[in-house]
Image (cartoon, rainbow, N blue to C red):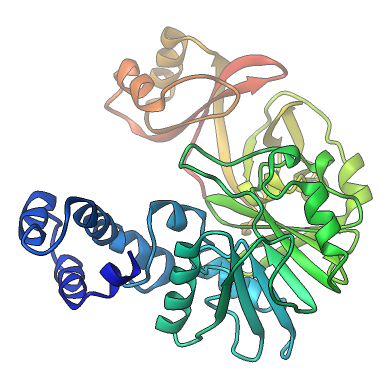
Length: 382
């Protein structure tokens, strides 16, 4: 497969189809003169992925398949994490995949990839070379790495297909017990997990860093050994904003639950996933509108900041199409968007059902207020 990626004819097709829409039938017909059906499948798949590769890494020609691309760390997170390593550090990138966690490490950090899959190792070597930071890599078991270093990084939430993230520590491959044992062979290390892992299942003696952007929390980074602490922090990578607290504070933080006030506040996904939102909300005298949902409310406007979006509340009513339509007409509002949390509804279908096409723009929230299903009507965010 690597030979196919590096074939001059394939490279020229990649360059061509990066500049115009991909016609898979036409491409397959052209490639049929030189390549087998299986080879044509791999080539077409890779070329079709090129725009997504460019979006994720800023380079279209990296070698990957769909699963490798899905599992890899994007360049914005990779560049942020690169600053965690001191110059001169030696790092093993275990379960290295196509190389997302190594691509943007400075050359002053010595890093070596390890993966069970020979194809992933070939991708890793080629991709780090393409980006001008060629790294060594070896086929091997992450639990018994064929090379050594003082530090490690590992993504144990490996998926054998595209069905989704594993969400429990007991389902990791390698599992958490194996990762913990492995970590004792190093001075310290970083474990990459999906951000949806329950906080209660993460070790207390570990630094927990939740990384995301304004619309999504994308990763939980667990620091072990010399990289451990008792802190939990949320990082908005795009803005560089940081909010942190001691783990003991996070475990006990609670907000009051009340009806919706004059403002509805939507915390950023990173603040929610890190469980830091109650501590962030307290200085603004905010409360939750439901004990199990991270929508906040207050009677004072929250100043603009990276951690939330603030909406002025116009009205609220129990859920029901006719009741919601009446509320919209009363205020002369045309809903531009329907946001949901804690309520099963298809937003596009529901907006079409409401049939409100006139009025000033507004935002609808379908959610729960003190365990009851409600619609909340707001103006667009400030």
